[in-house]
Image 1 (cartoon, rainbow, N blue to C red):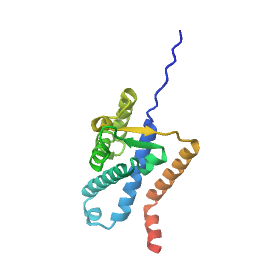
Image 2 (cartoon, one colour; image 1 turned 90 degrees about the vertical axis):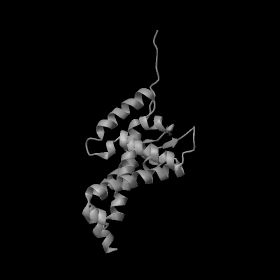
Image 3 (spheres, one colour; image 1 turned 30 degrees about the vertical axis):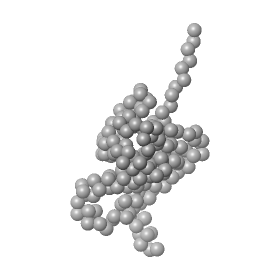
Image 4 (tube, rainbow, N blue to C red; image 1 turned 90 degrees about the horizontal axis):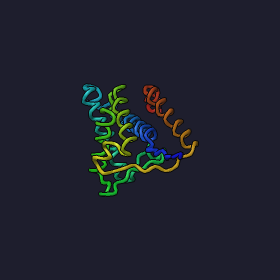
Length: 175
């Protein structure tokens, strides 16, 4: 007798790329808005820590107000909490643990190690460590190919802006 099992897709790659988009977008906006601050000029470690706190806080604010972020919305993802309102405190806790446990605070190259382990936990249990800790889960809607292509273009443009930061600043200065 042949048994067919349905594969459950927890959208790990959509979740990862949505987080990366938000991380780079909010980080880049922070960089633009704070480029002349005393932190940016004198202490890169303090500046990086402050940037991470801002990224986590902005993402939490968006989650608390709308249940999604720019990257998540683009890819049809929404964070929900069936047991408690998704207020700022719960959203901040969830986002904080996602960056600590899921990305090791965004340490370049190293962040892919916990991301891979987090994907394994998601695949095996249906939930991430931070969603389990916070009683939240992610709902996903169907997303067509066009939306993926537009997301890829938006991500490419964001990276182009980041990569051409000095040119970008010169353009802002001329206006």
